[in-house]
Length: 155
Image 1: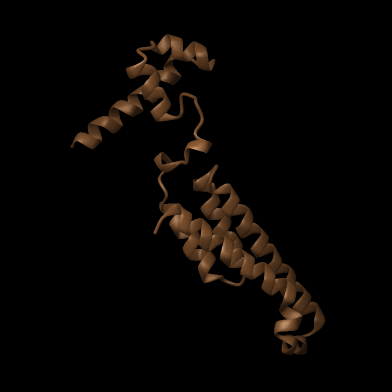
Image 2 (image 1 turned 180 degrees about the horizontal axis):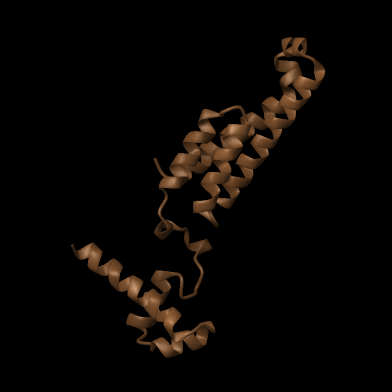
């Protein structure tokens, strides 16, 4: 499975929790034997779980490391929604290097961009630091990260 599948599962699961919360009186009228306050509380929790899961799914394209936690919280609030839990797990497996192009920032924390600036365009660390308004040491740290990645890929 992929990150996209994780997002789809999270959206479906969050939507189901939301719909169940909205229509629980119609689907399970027998829940009213527990009292209206109990059912209303349960309804609010399901709706909140669905909304949180949907928010996490949207966030997964921007901050996947945070999104899967939010989705998991929503899944647990949404009655332990198994689809949403599987979606969160798939998003957790997602690697930052797989970020879609429309989300990619052109700054020194984007290793592909920095590699192009430093190795392909032959910009100095000083030039990149000036362009990005950060210290030379900050750029050097990220260039070192690129070099470590290259070394680990060759091993």
